Image (cartoon, rainbow, N blue to C red):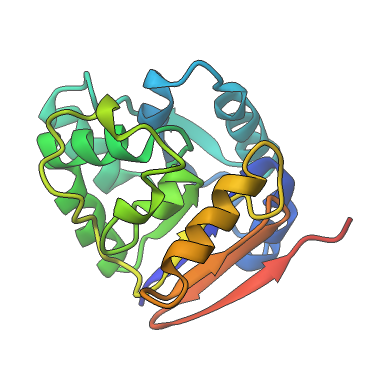
Length: 207
């Protein structure tokens, strides 16, 4: 059964993740993929996410898919207990997932029951098509992405950073443009989408 934890800002909802896993994450290993952040000037969330995972008791095993050999990609995605994909540029992330074949391995692992943790771009890429975030991310950062067809592991379309600076206006624009066309699921930085099989719900962190 698919188990996914899709967030905007993992550090802000780490307590929800512990609740979701019933604290069984302690001493588990997580493949940590920061690839989406490589083309971004702002990337503080990578270190913040890593620290938050470690505070949850997880052992972080980094995997930079844009440079790692295929054997390393295959090995780490299969052997570790969880898969975590950080925020950044969704189009660059999708390009590299497709180019390396990591997209197929991640889909297989999720389908077999391995928990997937997505943050911002890492959440968006689970939708069927990422064209809806063209105003949020610079799609020219991924000239070889081909189509915007994505991993399609969820039937809805996550919209991270709802009501949060500096994304308020661009998120509202996405909602205005696509709300009647596709099944959007906006979440703020203090919310997470919990996926169990074909069901999902939005949880909100206590503030």
